[in-house]
Length: 154
Image (cartoon, rainbow, N blue to C red; front, side):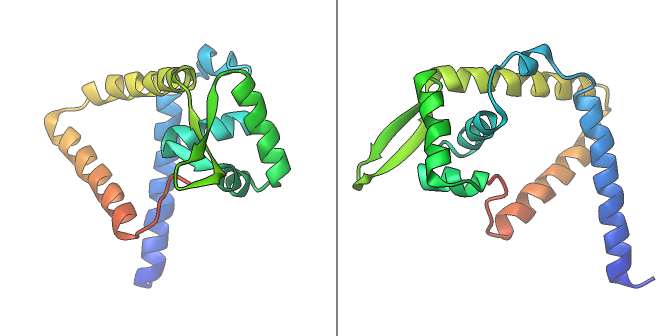
């Protein structure tokens, strides 16, 4: 087996294991996720802003692969619900920057905390040697993202 093929096989095995780990982290869909009362495009925008803090409407449109008008409509509805705020870019007043409000931050932070709490339960079941292995693996993934020079969140 060629080295490239062996690497591909290992990558696939890691991804499959990752799928199983994700199912352990989220054995059931928490009620809080189901009660968000957000459309899928709205949820995508909220998650995008949670991960990236701020974004132009044009960046949101590109991330959702929709027109500027559609992205603006999604943003409008989130602004009406006080989940998102629009601001003018101080460097260019024609540019609209979107960010989560305190309400939006709290909503997503609470959901994020559910995942962290479940991960903490699983991690506490590991011994110190296993925890170090998990930490090394996560550090390697973070480093790969940083070295690659790409923002893996968007």
